[in-house]
Length: 357
Image: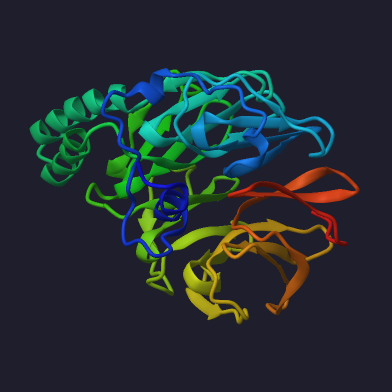
């Protein structure tokens, strides 16, 4: 088992690691073992967070999902059927959400994140990939058949790294080695969507950015794909950088895209003209998360525990708040005293300066 820092770095940051390494699951026990109650769940490694009405929901290692009803002052632990590391969470409304993680696990909630149920995991998906590989071979799509068979042969221990639902029925989950899954029935069944990327993509997909019908995928070594039809079809974009891209912000109406990545990578692009501009930021830390602010501009976080303000004109400045541990995700808060909540390798951080999400 990789230690925590190396595992998170390999899965999310790629800092000091050339490729994703998944938790070994020789007996799949962590896929069958429910998350154990822990008073330290909210202070361990949390990898993603969402505002769900007046509730905050965060996911992390050992299958921990925690929620707060009071703006992050106190946290309670949700009921979760697995104890693998969970990497991302998404909600379409105040009740319905999904979480993904190691072992290709996908969980769902219908009560705002209080209880969770398994929808699928790698053990089911391995068989699905093998069947789809045979079908692709018979259809003459050798590239897709080889990709799907490789997924099946590699086994069930790949991590999913992000999940996004366009509505309560249509969703995508992405992860290591170009894995992409889709559902059109709320996750009752999941299917391989690898063919939508050309059938031969093997770079890790870290993040899904969306706006309306528009979706952008970003990932390892400058991976960048665009869809204008809710993820039914994707086209590769010429990336301005070969650095790994961990997060970003997308406006489909304005065709504007912000990219955040390895060692201070920060780009602003106009997709209508394919014009890219690097934005200066005084850090060599990797930029991991972005949150738009109602007062204008964006809040950024990095793997050194720093927070940055990105102005609409492209200038950046560092906030005085410093976590002291990598901050992996940002969310709007639910209280004026803490307008932003961040999570990372040592739990939560309420961001209290005058920033309004």
